[in-house]
Every structure is written in C-alpha cells, then in structure tokens.
Length: 327
Image 1 (cartoon, rainbow, N blue to C red):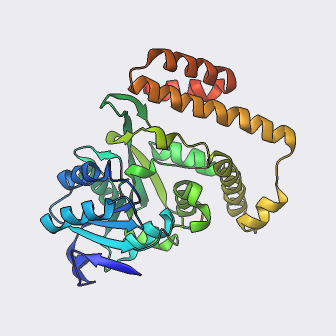
Image 2: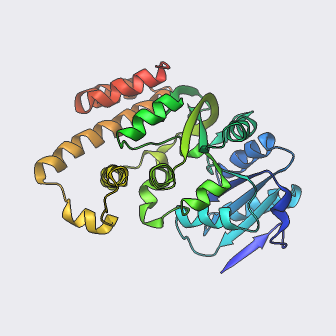
C-alpha cells in the first residue's frame, strides 16, 4: 500500500524538464540537508520525486513537511521496504516522466550547477543515454577531502572500454539519464540490488546501445559515515561484477548468455579464490575506514588503516591515490 503526498494528478509532470528521484530509507539524520541541496540546484522546470521506502525512523514525516512548503516535491510512500531498485523504478514511472531523470541519494549533497551541466550535456549529444559528475567525500565533522571519479570522460575512453567488454560505471549518486534511454534499457533490476548501478549502466550500454560519460566537474559531496562502511555486500558485488563482464562479452560477440542465478550456481569460486577475494575486499574496506578516519581527524587510525590497506590490496590503494590526485 502506498500513499502520495503533495500531488494527486498523475499527469502533473508532463511539462517538466528534469525529474530528480530520491529513494529514502531510514535517513532522518541526513535527508533534510540532502533534499534541500537538491532544491537549491533544481531548475525552475524541475521536480523531485521522493520515494519513502518503508522508513521507520521518521524520515517520511521530515520529507512530507518539506513537501508542504515546496510544491516541486512529490512524496510517494511504500508502507514496507521494497529495495532500492524498486523504489527508483517507482520514482521514474510515476506520472508522466520528463525528458531527463536524475538520481540523488538520501544522505549526499548536490553541488551547485549539477543539474544544468548534466542536462546541457544530454541535450548536446543525442547518443548519450546518461551522464554523471565527479564528487568529493564529506565526513561527519564537515571535513571535505578526496576525489570521486570513475568511468569514461571522453568518447575515446568509452569506446576503448566498450570494445573490450569491460564493466562501465559512472558515479550513480550523481547520474542523470535520458528518460527514453533508461526506459528502453528496462529500468532497474531488483535481482542486482547490491550493484544495481553497475548493472543498469552496463545494460544501457551493451544491450540498449547508448553511450555514457562522466563530466569532469564536481557535482556531489558523498557523505561518509559508519553505516556506509558496510562489508556485507562486497562479496555479492564481486560476483555481480564478474557476471556483468561475462554478459557484456557475450553481447558483443552476439552469443547467448545465462541468467545471473544460473551463472552464479555454475561459477562458485574455489577456496583459494575466496581467500584472495577476501584479502582484497578487506583491503578495500580498510582503505574506506582510513578515509573515514581522515575525515574525522583521527591520524593514528588513518595511518593504521592505510598501512593495512596497502598490504592487503596495494593496487587498489595506488588506483585510489591516482584518482585523488586527478590522474
């Protein structure tokens, strides 16, 4: 059962140019600041569709209060959690979706100029199905550090990655789709909720034939806190990434491919591989914990975690350091 706060006319968005979809689940400490940052950057013809996905901490009430003050906000409510993919799909499919649809996270902050730059990039190139922007990390104390940049920044980089069948990801918390592209790709697949961003971008590229790009401008502050340090999905994400690469190459070669569940049953890693993955995943997690310690101004915790990360997964640390330095 779902409720709709803010609008009752399902065709209200026909004249809008940009829709921002924000799935919210138990984010009462962050969602007001996140939504206000979206509203500050939203174009005059924009709208925000917030999907409160069964929150139990008062997040829904906070969002509804903002919706009463600002007519650009629509709140859709799921009485029970449905998962991030279904929540995103509901936000995209609500009413008449405008030409462009963006995603905003319930705890990140949108930086000024994001939506205008992304819409301009999509309008300028009809072959682009989605664009995103770079970001920086925001810690609990308000400290900003680091740099987030992934994915192709030019057409040459895109074609090099695609021709090799590589996994392609542009930063999902700052993504903007062309409506026709995300719908043609089939929207989000709930089977991949641990890596729904990677899965839909690769389906957009390899199955639906669109190009994607990361704009080399800062568009979002990624909030880092203890709950973002979860280790629980890393193993699942690794299996999903392997499957997506397998599927990409099959599609490039025009060959059939197995559904994910069937492929997963046939490709369980052996003990040695599981240990290698565990070491790398632990190293990646320790690097994240080092970043959180830096943002919290805890130098000893930072040093301990960065040493551990460097021992466990040195290639990951070197790659992250190159990104942070803009290389």
